[in-house]
Length: 177
Image 1: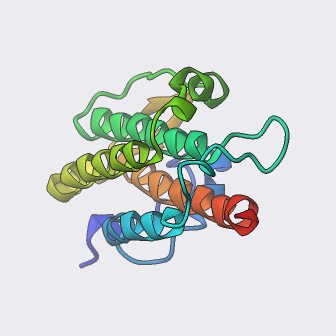
Image 2: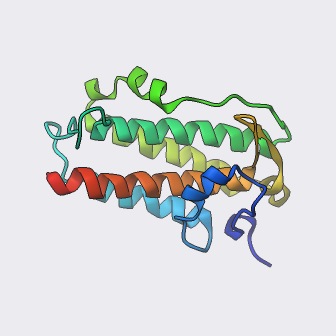
């Protein structure tokens, strides 16, 4: 029998927009993908100095620090959605606007090392939750941002969101350093 965390979400468990993230996640156990993501993201950012962490590849784009802060904020929000739905609270839960959250973070005033520590701590909390979820909880659904979402899909979106932003960092930010 396949573990619930290794079952890719089906259409109808998430807003089609989120396929952008889910499709980036390799087949297999999403928990393992999330665990490996910590080291992969740390390694990608290892050569970024504090002086370069404010780099923006174009006018109006987020800095490296802001991207990392956005990753943590988004993971917190989707983990809360996952928790609520897994526990039987079907919502509705509000949406969020990353374009207002990100400036409000003021990530550029925080040392990059602290932002990376925050990301690791947020991920550790996500993993702690996922590892103890009952099998049926992965299937539970609710409404977030006025659209259906399953607990399973939220986990896969978290993983794919990290992969997406890590690739953006590698392709548009880190190549310039």
